[in-house]
Length: 123
Image (tube, rainbow, N blue to C red; front, top):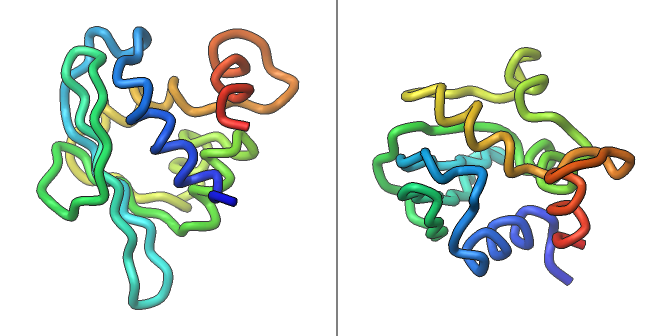
């Protein structure tokens, strides 16, 4: 059974296109730090077209957090901007990409709208 993080990124890659990001282009690297180890996920967005890999390369925006927190983000149990404001995540580079990409994360299970629909696909 895959964790919510892997499922989230594999679903993005499989979809290949996200209408909510039609006006967005850039690269985001998610660095999931656990002790001395860091797991990397790279999201490349080109006007809504998505490509995901586990590369550790330069990106327009780098988001750092713990694997446990990202698991909660990917499962819709946590809100990314709230975690950022609490200091549980770090962002370097173009912070505007964080705000734009935050829309594709699932929301709480009792929410409505696009986030709720995506959340149902992830399960």
